[in-house]
Length: 133
Image (cartoon, rainbow, N blue to C red; front, side, top):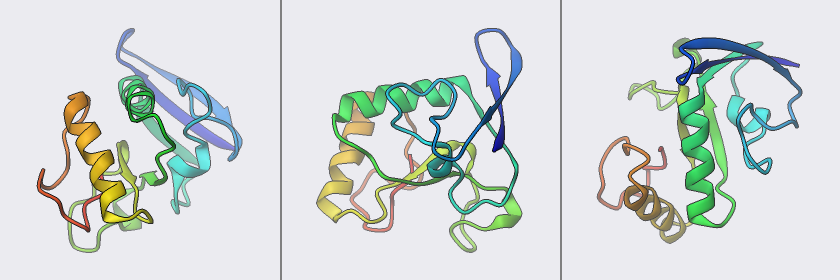
């Protein structure tokens, strides 16, 4: 069971939820993001995010129209990530599509750019290593 702290941007308050690994994240619609996907390999019992990030995920998933595999969206800085590169997974970035083909990842990337819901980490150019929203 994970303790999930969500900053609600609408009320300027923190909310606390308790969810099992196979349950959807708070504010997630249609079960498209389970706690275990959000957590990834983090060992933390407490996860955090914000309502706005969950709503952006819901919208992006709807616009894309297909499942988007999530490697993780949460890691504490000392738990690693992209080696010596940025550590930006504190509940507001999603590492996606790592097991998809370059063309599938490019479709997600183009969808994300067109949606204007996200700022793409890295470059807008096709990059086979880039998979983070």
